[in-house]
Image (cartoon, rainbow, N blue to C red; front, side, top):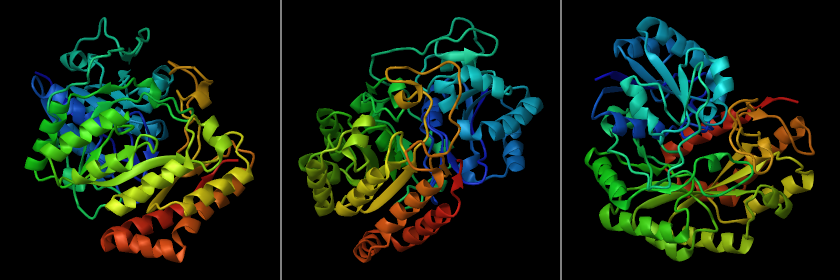
Length: 458
């Protein structure tokens, strides 16, 4: 039996969300439970002594985080990392390896898309695992290295990820080991939350997103419901369904929503949704099952840009769905992306007009950066790379325009989009009416701070 440490390293500056092959800093005062480490906690607990250190959620300085990590005396470490934190993660994990001699394996965007190059950049890692779904996880914890798939080990030839089409089933995660009281969802007044999956990966092929590298696999409904019952028994008050897309088909979304309604009614949950999957009827069932907030990627108000992003939008359907959500009391956060390749000033204006014309409660505006593994970064039809360059830019904080406007102008449009949406009198009144006061203050101050932290790369 090995001593296994699951670690989310301390974040530099703003808290960084490293989980599920993404790496972005938070825009305000929120932080959700890392699904990678949760799944690993379930898979490894039966045969190993598992400890968890989420230094980012606990806001630990590196020295204190290192002290706590060393105290667990790990034989094996599975660590989250990301392109935007790889240098600081390397420094932290190098010190941990020096003091413990532990084998260290990484998960995150660099592990999924550019593991060979990341091994060169970060010598503290002994290897990178393609995703938390890989069957090699248990073997690595057991000390085996030969003949594994889904992992890139130092000084060995890269192995491809496993391509299972089976349902994604895994043992019960150890939510009790995680500091769930320190996790908080963006629009909730409830202190404490956790992340749960109803399916793994994504079947869609949006050109700006790299999630298609993780093939979609449904999770058995009985697994999901058993975990939700466990979450409720632990007293965790909020759940984030950490699927890339809730559903992701209408039939599957209906099945999951019906099951939650029957087995865990009233447990508040949030989910990322596609507008073209949602219907007013589906939203009614989701609401009856406890759905509190939906996050929808509208991306752009320009038809041309939406087509290039592989995510065309039907404004009439979107309006119907979002109007139904408001009627049902489901709050809506809409995601938009600015600065995509070929985007013109008229396209940016169209996005701002769309954002202010629909019945949505909150917006989350992202700055485009080419994500390794995405079609826009690697060429249409290209898959994840074992090497090459990583973009290395934080879509929450770094302005580096690939559009037909410069970075300075794009920063202006970013601020105009955020402030122009929220500072309308009717919208201010709406946000105040549907957002708990403590949440409004905490998130509002965080968002305003971000507007002054934008870093421009021309």
